[in-house]
Amino acid sequence: MNAKNTITLSERYMRYAEQQVEDGQFPSVEKVVEAGLDELMRAGDGMPREHHDAVTAMADEINRRLDGPEDQWIPWDGHSMAERIKAKLDAKYGENKKVSR
Image 1 (spheres, rainbow, N blue to C red):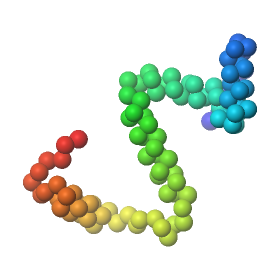
Image 2 (image 1 turned 90 degrees about the vertical axis):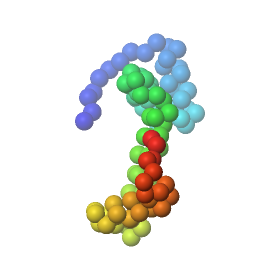
Image 3 (image 1 turned 180 degrees about the horizontal axis):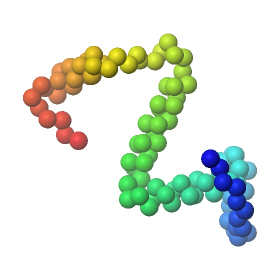
């Protein structure tokens, strides 16, 4: 849900935001401001930036795959999929070895 609001930026910030739009980095000044707020929110949650980058990359990959044709999706079959994954992990790391996180 969007909330409509009006803000005033100093000339310095407005010029910078408009330059970002002109350079093709953002589609609008609004998106420049949103990106700055997103960055502040990420910085304020105590999670290191590289973790955010990994999560963002994972979300991007999931969305990319969802945009692909459904016949290329991996079917979810619950328990048997979990068993196949466990078997692959056991083969790679050994059945009794602990996987470090």
